[in-house]
Length: 313
Image (cartoon, rainbow, N blue to C red; front, top):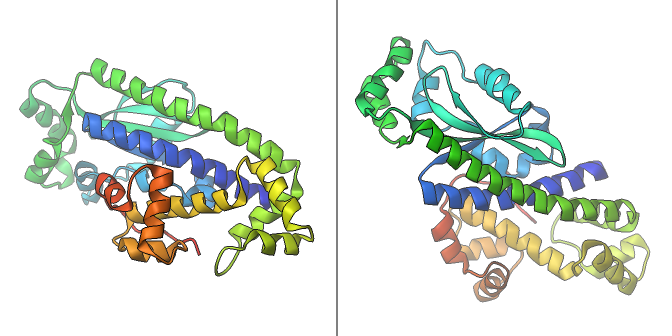
């Protein structure tokens, strides 16, 4: 793995974690569903794969699943890629879009470090004041595809009613929030990237951490492998990363623990062991100190979704 790929992955992961928290809060407050689509396939093959973007990747709700599973339906991918994503890449602000199945969403372009990464989709909305008539219009578009009418009606009933103007206003609110998060993190992480490029010793140290097998290396172990004194390594790491090595490793472990709490059914003790803590109490103390909440409460408020692809050793 090239050094640049590691640091790009770290930047994207840091941004996506913050975006996920913002979006989850927005969903809770509005009752809407948010998903994400990349602008291309390259991101799926790089550091993006380990981030929260993929946990929202594509439309996975009941309505869209029924549409996609119909025997006479062409995949939505072509329209999403060549329609919505292509238009989002040419815009700076959210816009309203209605898919071929008659579903209305707000599309929010996402830029990171000035590069178009993809788009969030906010919805879906029932924009017709007469729900039955609104469903009738949708059925007229998809009824010949061999879809179960009553299942589709039940899925449509979960759509939030909202005029297109109100939907766009909500989309702009979310866009402002995610733009602020991406922008504020971008400045900090860009500065860190510059410092890393100027300090090859810390670049090598981070590569050793990411590529380590077994337990994470100590400061002394890294210093010995880099042929410098532990004291010098400690000072240099703090200068470049703006935190101590111990704090950096602790934050890595707690971040991984948050992921496991959200996306697995492992017990809190099993997660503690997975991320390098031998006792439940010490893990809970560290987790609470960094997040302000206990692991149990964190899991209760964030839920369990899918299993992660790999674990921190």
